[in-house]
Image: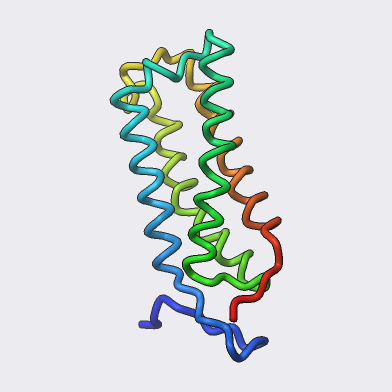
Length: 143
């Protein structure tokens, strides 16, 4: 079985990209967000309230870019590695969110079923923020 890293041959001094690192963080952030929404979602995820939903979207816009930045810096992701890093950072949690969206009512009993559309929009927003952030980070090579 092949190791969970890949060497980029175009730049010999590049650190291999750790797939497992990004998969771990993808699942960890998904699990924490899902748990928070399941336990306390009714306190802040209120589709009828523009203020509540605006705050949820704003929180994602403020929290996710620094997270992506830190993860990419921690792993010294080079510009030519960003696409792969973003795939391994987003796809695992996107696949898990297929389940949370499909089984919205039983997984989030504290939220009204009418919140499912807002939940889907919020998920798409978050993944778009992650992908845009990762793709648009400044091209600074590590030394």
